[in-house]
Image 1 (cartoon, rainbow, N blue to C red):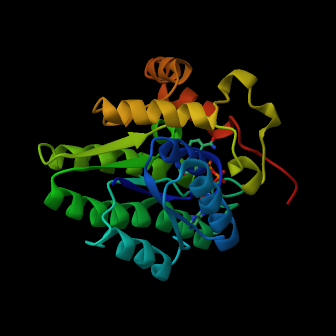
Image 2: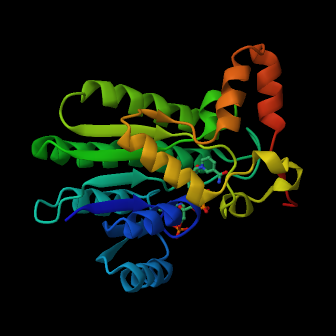
Length: 257
Ligand SMILES: NC(=O)c1ccc[n+]([C@@H]2O[C@H](COP(=O)([O-])OP(=O)(O)OC[C@H]3O[C@@H](n4cnc5c(N)ncnc54)[C@H](OP(=O)(O)O)[C@@H]3O)[C@@H](O)[C@H]2O)c1
């Protein structure tokens, strides 16, 4: 029996992970804040794929929410074989337009929760000598882009470092760095994404398929899609100041307050 726990499983990339892993026969533990949505999704995946699907209602911006998911990861009776730390969001506005409280909430969800859940999962995976963790970062990790980009840079660096430290123990860790993906993310953040060129948009199911292939190949960093691989390669040749200007404007138009 193989079980995957996915945070932020009710929408976008997390829901795509849930669908894809259920299709592969994984039993699921779905975590997010909206209980009704979690149960709807769990029931649908159970009915369609015959897998067990449980839910954990958890706000990962809170101590109780992080602890609830940690407790589930610490279960010896029902071990988790694959953790996908995916929950995340964007704040509406640039630096100083966003309150410090909201910036800290982002760090709690994107960094503290990822650190604590990865640690809970890998501790028990190392004991069993097998398991995997996918931490969803972003290509924003490689560009100056406010607290969002900085938090995703932390996720990427942390994951790469932890993967090295745990090498040889049968546990795989991978940072997933997609570009723009069509999900609820931009609407939720109040972003006007109409100016983002069509070629930059990725499909969540394809991102997930590539991520799972990359994890199976033992990659520690996954940048799905050749367009974004090329963009990252080219970005290394561009002066940092020019890059900062481009990345602080691309896709950062916000709707009315
Ligand atoms: N879309 C993109 O262009 C893009 C690109 C690169 C990276 N990413 C990253 O991909 C991940 C998933 O984003 P997405 O695009 O799929 O976004 P999405 O469609 O808005 O889905 C976000 C998911 O996270 C959950 N969530 C949000 N805040 C939470 C919290 N405090 N506690 C627990 N769950 C929470 C949401 O459910 P509830 O509201 O029910 O809690 C939802 O299931 C994020 O980490 C994001 O930074 C997205």
